[in-house]
Length: 311
Image 1 (cartoon, one colour):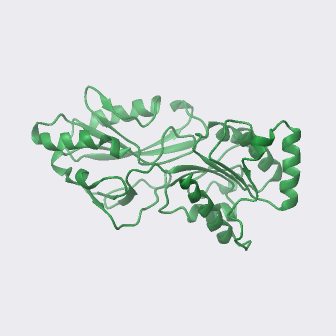
Image 2 (cartoon, one colour; image 1 turned 120 degrees about the horizontal axis):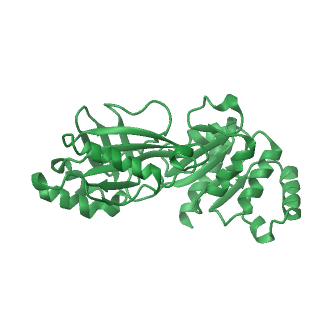
Image 3 (tube, rainbow, N blue to C red; image 1 turned 45 degrees about the vertical axis):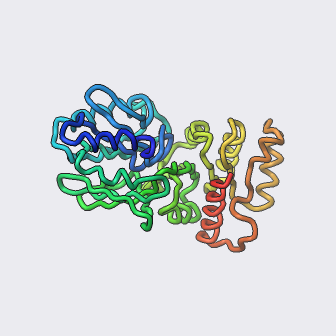
């Protein structure tokens, strides 16, 4: 996280023209089974690094890219997309979008104001990156898909709070509404469906039925899982996977009282313990909010996820 690198960034700023050339790698967005979430950063020099964006080939390639930028003028930057597939030793078809930059020690005044709780504004310019920390801004949501950010892109992020991973299964009307309402919130979306026709939706990873439960197994313990696919057997398959592993921060299932009762009975028959079953939130969403419109359900679910911050 940025706050863990503040000391090093301030030392770099103080050294000025005699500072050791340093690059910074930032995760701007991630989805799927990514090793770290958006806002994670590391510093890279010709001889070493500080911090990590996650081990393995992803970090190795990011360090290569960072060191290549050290041969270019300070202020030089690149945006790189990395599919988290077999070539990088990752699964679930996720993606990571990185901002790699050669830091300019003369342009680090913003570090003094970027304490936890501030909002950091990053503006991509032709030959430099401009930043400032403010108290009153609106955070922006970044996607790991779609057109890469270019000159003129402006990103606002909260400093000091790691977004909670949300593994969202289902890209129907409710799933799309949930994704819409995550803009500006400290939630990192990993979004999955099995239907090829949903692949055109920005941010959705389409996986075969036989692979999708692997994403539940690979989710970090702090992740929330929301299950609302188009298919009851798939919902059951995912719910069983979520309750059969080490506890997750949240497991939510959409459905009628009849569907949920049948699922609970079958889960017990399939060996899920009473304690594990008690971790299932079904129906998903805050109690007392009435309405079946996708946006009503979505707002209820998102509010429920935000309550996890109080735990």
